Length: 410
Image (cartoon, rainbow, N blue to C red):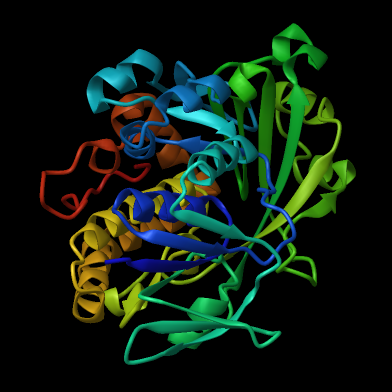
């Protein structure tokens, strides 16, 4: 019996969902609103919880050809430049968690997922197809486009990002809200930098009401730099990719150490992204309803301060695939399978959302909290920076949950 999965979206989460559903034996029809498959943005970090799943899907070799695998995470003071704490990555991460910590360009991750699904006969990719709405029918779910065209399937997966049209109809809970934080992103070839600024590690600079992250991408050939500052968002928040002014970045970092400012001044151009969010999930009902499931940013957008936005989308896709693999009678089994998916995922996603929110307060701390943070990193660096509850392999057959943690920087 043919089982049809309809997917709204064409980004990383949508491609991961398409691959997982196809591997589960479903025919997949994916609908992207743009006229080409692409992924805007710059760098992305993937913890071993995500790279482990990619390896399980047979994408480990493709990942190794485009990613960098930093040996260390280093945390430094933005104001003074000295080291606050560090965490070994590289082989130590692989030995402890069974998979590597990777940094890569978002476009490279998207491309390897796209190549994997495009090569499967049961996956049908459609462009210029923005979902206008859907209707539940006795036989399944019917998706409609603005031109009146309709298609029917057994399940609809809303993986259409932060401004999800599918979520808007399912939950009707309004638009995501600005955080008051602005992300400026830049990419530069390492060979265009002086030797003192080239890096093959992840470096985080912490300052009052700001922080900066840099790490290698494109196999280490390029350096990705992200500056997070407090500020007013642009008027058009849905189009996140705005030109950023180097003068604005330098003004926001005025007074920070010379080493950091030298890195900032070496960047050739900046793009601006206004960070938006939703409150952490509070129930499974926010991830699935009837024959419709939400995945990735459509379900649980989060601040980037735990570097897990893509990781959670990939985890969502893997769990969704596991749940869909058990569907024998689509008419009766789909709602139960999606309910199981939501129950397995919502608490972990909520925890990551909440931890990312808290990390933002800690990263940007001022006054006594900042002093306490720096002292804790100096005394307990590796213990604070490691995230075993997030990275470890879950117990077989159980949700990817973990006991509550209390350490502030995890």
